[in-house]
Length: 626
Image (tube, rainbow, N blue to C red; front, side, top):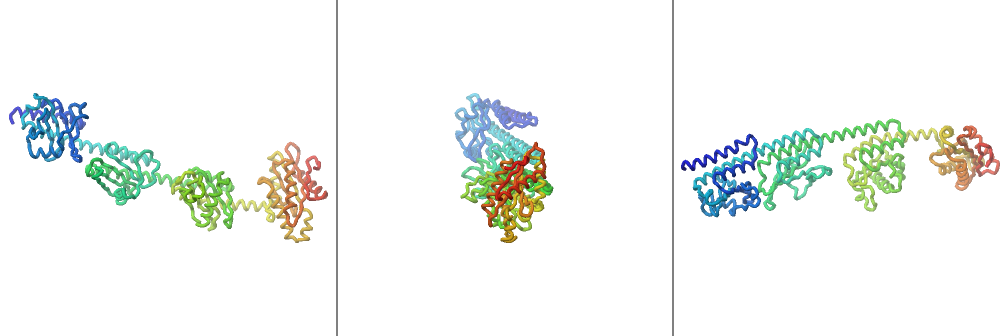
């Protein structure tokens, strides 16, 4: 090599050195290639230079850079294949021979590193350009460019590795700054998009994941197409799946924490026979970091949920043990369940001792007071009595296809006390599979802790009723009647009072005996209970005398009720008896008192008894008889 040729090569090397040295710590692979082509163009006098890379999978060339960027997209790859160019280099080092080199105004320079073909350059120009260069200069030019491209690849790899681990550090830092499950999953996808824009990836998660927006998340399910994913999940080690037909390689990296595996990261590398080894370590580290973050987020969410569950049970137990009335207790429970479980309906159903009849406890949501609730109550009652187990139904229409199901998601928990089935709680929602299993377990715990309070409330109210209830007739006692009349005369605007006496009751006792006499009193009491409202008070006054007070009821309405009682007793009693009824009335704005009200009713009863019996007589406050 003479001095001129040596000077050309030194000049090229110096230019290559300057290209890298002037980067000042900032590396841009594309810019480096452009600078390399510009230096070669200046040195050779070529009009245009195109740099082609070699795709090992397809064995085809692709454009990496060009001195004419506008023409880069339309550049035609060399007619020779990668393998063909490599074979030509092995057979002949003469670049201008075999039609590969300087022909038709174009020169192909192969770029090699040892026996590895990195790519090639095509130089285009006229007679006064690179054609004056001798063969040995072209050989040196080819070798130097190959070495430079190899170093550029190495630098690009180093920078890429640095960027990847910066991403890993960033994502790790972000994972540890949040306990939000959606944020963790989103950050995994974002990192993959940044590092591998040409790859395809999915998160195959092992638990319920229906609320993560548009993230590429799928349920991890075992099937014939998912064997490698399941192996990664079960073994906790990275698995590979290569497909020559589909021209892709797939990596399955387990999302592994300290306590278990929470899913699998699926990464699909296109146009690759084997997954790139230099990417496996990074993806595995990312998956392990993500697995730990998912585990921490899940544990955090579980701890929050457990705390909330304990607070719910504690608050509920505290409120239930504060001597609430039964209706208040059940109303409170319904509100707690609707709010905490995102339920639409909550009902509490009592069972009779023999399990035949049901009674909806006041405080249940309004739906259970309608006929539409009957099919649900009937079906659940039969299942609870038969199995004595809680029910967790994801889609009720699949359980009972004959019933048009308005509510699909159903949870039912038996209420038992000392081994005896008292009833059951029923919680429902329209959407199928609405309640997670954790909610079902919490409902079981809540009802278990609350059943004793329910039972105590019922027993307390039964005891209170026994104190104010006549044991024979089940009507209220006279003292309770007195208290309610005094209360009504202070709070209401009017009221009607009636005294009732069974006609010729002594003859009943003498004829049939005292047992039949008691039964007659019970029959009359049942007629009274069956013909007055829940807010009215029926009471046993003493012996065969009974009384009824109708708060906030006018005299005319009270008269109708009194006459109805007289008629019903005559029609339904056995042995047949009649009653006499004395009715009195009070209204606000007129001076009156309870003793005066009683006196007027007593006088009216006296009149009824001595004017033919089997009738109702009304004495108003003005002492006029009606």
